Image (cartoon, rainbow, N blue to C red; front, side, top):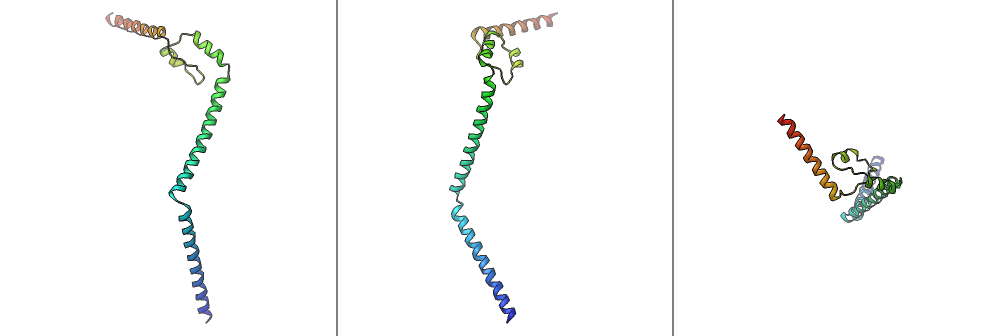
Length: 123
């Protein structure tokens, strides 16, 4: 009799556990859908992007705050183009498009260099 009661209690516990697990899975299936997963991931991406943009803006402000007018003035006064300019570029360098005069000057410099190389080969 006691053994029977023990087995019966165990069976009831197992049934209760199975019922609880079944209910938990049903609840998960109802609450976790492709739409909820997509919404959650979209929100995470938005939060990440907001954080990344704020960090980028902060870094940009730090880089541009250091007398940007003076840097722009210096950049306009210097005629640095071509390979020389490429070597000297840093994260704080102010860049601008080359003027027509500067582009022509670079082409002339390249032609002079090629002409000198041809002369050396002839000698």
